[in-house]
Image (cartoon, rainbow, N blue to C red; front, side, top):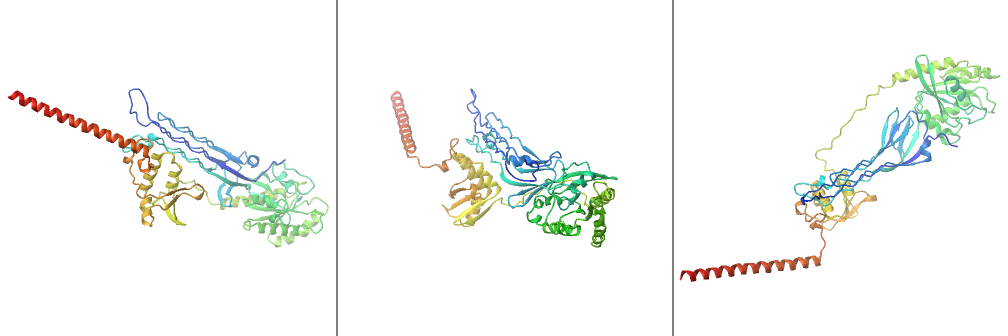
Length: 492
């Protein structure tokens, strides 16, 4: 059964924002209570947080889909919908987050470090928030925005100061077990270590971590053996220790050829040339082990390596190796630039930034920009007044003026947003903006389609009103004349 996973593909989906509410206050003896629709709640986000107690990505290997909760819709009486809860995912220290194309999104190092993998959607405004001096009782509300959804790749790169590298069965697990309190699996067959092991070593005043990387073989950087899976765990180390087996019985192998093979694999993997190297000639306690170490030491020192003859069984040479590693780690920490506290950087939008762009694509005009695309997502296209409000917002932003400048004509196709969720419509430049032109709630006469039956009823009503007005005028005139005649008779 798999117990260690250091690379997973995860689908994260944030919660959508709740819809705003379109409501009018209704109470006895208060027929004009006004709009009281509340705003929708914010959708929950998916957040990755480093937890020192987590050491593997196994949990996400078994359940690779994670979703936060949605925000609740608003309600009448100015009641705002509840916000969705953020989904917090604990990840190991040293987790690198990438997108599907391999671009690094975040490098999570240090307990408590967090990264928002998927942002929750905004809640829609209710009609109470949309009311203005010209639009006193909106008959619509804004929709909540959908939350972000995407696929990410998480890779674990162990955060260790020292990495032990070498052939399988070179004795790396034995060394880490005696240098630290780690208890890795130890056996007399290759590839006993299937996962990186971490141990904490104390040498004088210096405390450092040491990692046992699973055995490397020729071709590891191309995927042979276990090397490709775990070479990433040496990237963060300050020093590499070549553990060379002085008691191998395999034909064609000796400490020098093993060193050259491992160095070749590290060079092909790349990015490790600046790491200092030490050599640990291991298993000098076995027959002929000391003789092979004596023959090899001079050649290694000629190549510039510091060489230590060690034995995990007798613990010979381990103290010297431990303090030498502590010195290198301390020097690396001292040379590391001091990390400054995270500063909040404000990048305000330039005052002359229109907030959108218009490009011509295959005879159509595509509008891109954060505001137009967000407004489209928030619009309920089944409500004429909401569509009219969208037209007003686009006009105030300067979209229509810009379309005129680039030569758009009436009836041209206009597209707002990317291909996957674009809104396409025919441009009507005569669609004047202005909320004061709105009629009944939920309607906008600028967008009305012909309604013959309604028009006929209105014409008949106008005729009846005109006839009634004419009759009343005639009655008034007749009454005036009769009064005048009666007055003349009294004078005579």
